[in-house]
Image (cartoon, rainbow, N blue to C red; front, side, top):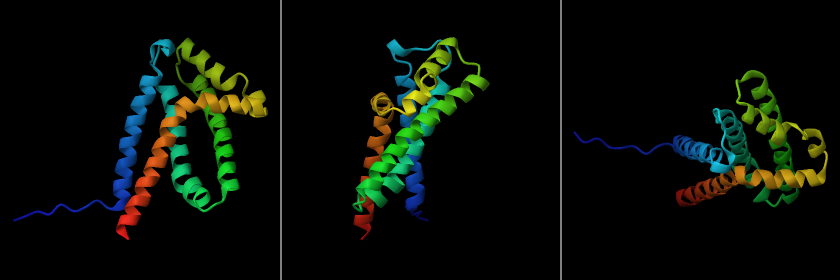
Length: 166
């Protein structure tokens, strides 16, 4: 008897693709946070978990809202506002996550100082300063460039798949 392989549903294929991409991204974040000039004595997973959480939020906001519903439909003001909201959301996410990690996890002193220095120390002054926002944007480029590229590639794959189905 011959068995036929059935194709995955589009949702299952998208879910598997996202899981694979997140696994690759987690590996990137572990490598990025263990580079020779940025190495911690203790575990690095709290920082990676914070970065992964926001990367997933960023990816889904770009792929399912900002790109298809605003940017490609010519609502450039909404798309720009969405980008600004994501910039502020990154700061709030990292601030709250850093405070929670410092309060409830056994962090190494170096990790505690790093989280505090990057995300807690000047939170309010940076949040309210346009120049501070520029600094945050430049600082988060290395962390979020990979998810943004993946978002645009994933969206291109979705559009191509839909075009082929038609």
